[in-house]
Length: 387
Image (cartoon, rainbow, N blue to C red; front, side, top):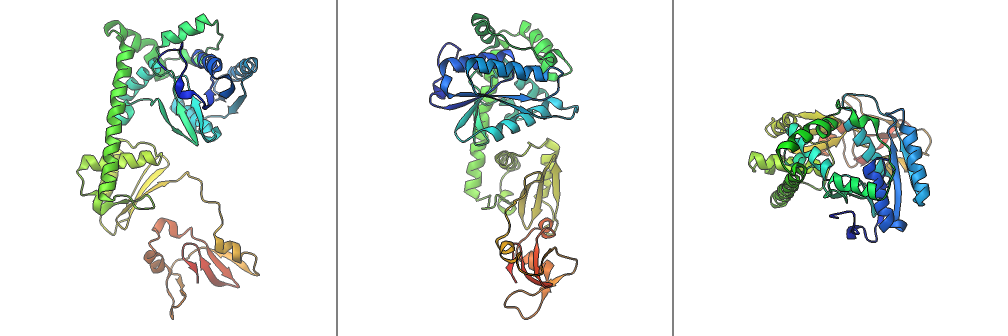
C-alpha cells in the first residue's frame, strides 16, 4: 500500500487482526481496514498496565470497535519496571499477539515510514549488523499467522491528513513525550534537527532499511547454500562442527546467525558470538557452554546443541510409563552416582554412565531421564526403552 486512498490488494480475502493501541496511527488503520475489509476484521488491544490511564485506553478502544461493529478483545499483562521496559513490553506484546493468532490470520500493525526511520537509527546507534539495520520487515511469520505492516511505506504526514479528513478521535499516550525513552528522544529532538540539514530524511532512512533488508536476504540465502552444500545440520537441528569449520570465519558466523534466527533465539552480541566461535576449537573431550539470556549453546561429540531453557517441556508421557504406572508397586526414580544396570541380552551389568554415553545422550540431559521400577526392579528407562 503506497497511500491510504487505495485498497491494499495484499489483504484481499484475508482474515485480518488489528493491533489497536488507541493512538492516532492504529485508529487510522482501523478506519482504513473497516472501510475496505469490514467483514474480515477483528481488533486486539494490549493493556500493559504501565500508565494510570491504561484502563481508560482499553475502554476507548472497546467503545470504538463497538461503534464500528468490529469484534474486540483486550489482553492484559503486567511488567516489572526495569531499565529496559520498552523492549520488555514489546516482547510481551508480540508474544501475547502471536499466541492469539489463528492459522492464516494476518496481524496488521500501524507502523509507518517515520517509525522505520527511527528503528534504523536506534539499531545503528546500538552497533547492529545487517539484520538490525534491515529494521522492520513489511511481512513475517508470527505464531500460526503472519505479521503485516501495510503502512510501512507511508509518511506520518499522510496519516495525520487522513485522521483530519475523516475527523477521527484517538488517545494520546502520556509516555510519548518522555525523552528518557530513546525512541521518543529520536522522534522529538534528534530527527527534527537532522531534518533541517538533510531533505527527505525519513524517506532516505527508510530506503536504507530496504537496502539492508535485501542484503539480509542475500546473507540468509548464502547460509542456506552453505548448510545444504556441506550438510551442516543434522535431523535434530544440531550443527556438525567437523564440517562447519571448513568454512571461513565470516561464513561460520553467518551460518550461526541464520540458525539462531530460525530457532527464534535472541541475536547474540559480538562478545557472545566470539564465545560461540571459541566452542568450535575446544578440546574434543570438553563440554563447553555459552549462555545468554535464556539461551544456551553446548558442544558435545562434535555437535553444537541449541537450547532454550525457557521452552516448555514435553508434557506427553513416555509410552512405557503409561503402560507400567498402573501396575502394583510402580515407582519413578532418577540415576544415582556410580549406578549400574543390566541391558536385555547382556549377561553382566554395565555402568549406566557408559550406557548413556553409548546412546549419545548429552550429559546435561542424563539426570532428568525417568527410570521405571516395579517392586524395586528396573523395568525401563526413558530414551533407552525396556530393560
